[in-house]
Image 1 (cartoon, rainbow, N blue to C red):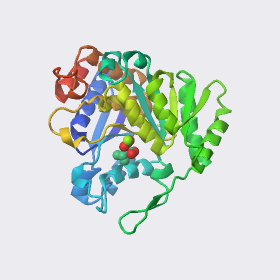
Image 2 (cartoon, helix red, strand yellow; image 1 turned 90 degrees about the vertical axis):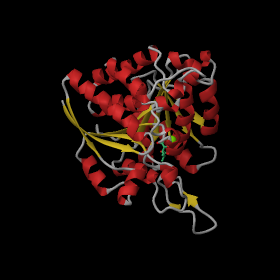
Image 3 (cartoon, rainbow, N blue to C red; image 1 turned 60 degrees about the horizontal axis):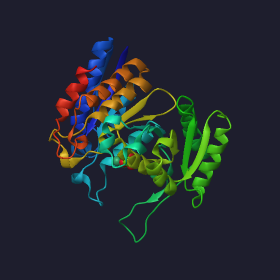
Length: 353
Ligand code: IPM
Ligand code: MG
């Protein structure tokens, strides 16, 4: 098949890990007889430096002509001035919103060979395999706001409509039907009106999915349950901010934030794929970054945007074999154990495809 992919390397370790992910897609194309073409564009801090805009028009124009977007990471101390008129993160929020990518899928899986690396006891981690479905284009991230800096108060509004909740709940229930048939919905219905609407709507949507079990958890309780009974979760559906926070917490179960991919989708096959980690400026340029999250994001791109399931699995299996070989980047190396570079790790993945 022919596919056009827009690559947004971004800032910090973004360019290093993106290069590995592109190499993986090129290997897949060669092995399976596909023709993938790659174009690169600016977003984030680097786009601010070069154009003054974290999400240049040119980037959006290019993105509109592609089948999928592969993104590294954005942000860094250089652009972290709280009074700056533009921030790299606006690029990320802007592109999610521009393309209406309302469903953010974040699978969290514990590789048995990494279980000892996570801070929880091994027996608690057995069988952990959950899928976060985070609402990505609404809620407090996009409510009305008064920017801070010009007064002695500031606000952000958490707003959800039933349609926004319905469509993301549908994604969650459908995903659960293909998995262990359980959805946990996260809210704060005991305090927030928007979250009462969330819960009511999820209950309504559930009527169409009688084969799926539904559980509700308040977000504060959910932070505990994620650590005390992580393997009991299948699909977790949450609003924008709670999904952001809980998916970072859950990533610890996998041993490192560097392991986890994500897909941001709408109702068709177009999507944006990025690791859930940030730009890690402290280790940028040192060959220490773990490319796994970005490589697994390429696997999700193959699965969801290109519908190439065999190819997606080939990438996921190559990562598993690489870990089984004992290959470890710095973040997943045993304490005082040795580790290999981003390049060496990615080469091992490539050799297994
Ligand atoms: C994420 C990140 C972003 C978010 C930031 C960088 C804007 O934390 O993708 O989880 O909050 O959505
Ligand atoms: Mg986050």
